[in-house]
Image (cartoon, rainbow, N blue to C red; front, top):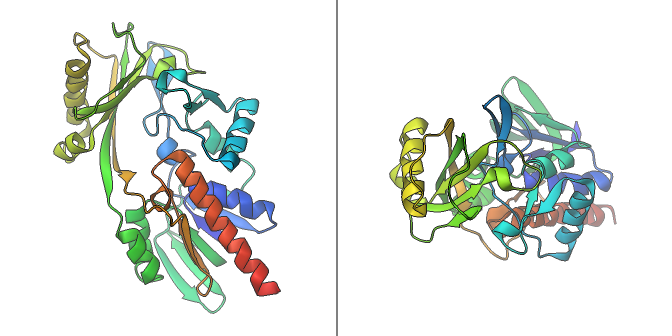
Length: 319
């Protein structure tokens, strides 16, 4: 039995897990993904006989909070992150992939990948979490998954928290990964669209720590993503690649590799001021960027806030 079970191995969940483990708590983290990433995911593909990585989730992150800046500085010192001026003066990326900081955070922790939490139930000893054929028990459960998923998981176990998470709406985003045999004749490494079908595009192969063939990641705007939400991914990829060429003025080129990923909960509305929520009577809490700000840093700050709330309750209960 763990002291604390954390559902969700993204930035918020791992930040909370790190702080709690450093305070001596026995932590288990479960995540439905096959490996570290979450919204900071990276996907590999073979192009012209070499492996190329696509950051198809978060494209970069910023560090404004002093505590988060210290963490990012440590990532930079270890080679897990680097500045990316093409996205702005304060932009950072994981190296050699956006998921590298997540991987580094998970490494010293007990994280179980490929484990999906199906149901929570309260017992006399604490919480019971059903996850497929596995069952976990813990005195405290922390839920650090997208708001819409948290609302469903917590509906019976913690209705108040479920209602809080359920009040958040997230915009979807289709992400396209395109590889080309030669560099595209576009002078910039990034493209930002305002009301265009393409909200963002980046020459992924030009990011620090990357190498190999010309690789682009294209993000559709929320409106365009909703228009294409139910398309098969190959059709969505073709449509958005055409949007990209039209938006940039680049002559259409045939890609060597073309794939797409649909992020259903990409851009949550943030409930600023919340940070995190913990119910000490039930021993259950929630964290996520939707409770702070829809950024990587917001997720980290939310996870830290939840860990602090748990530790404060531990101190209060023993004093």
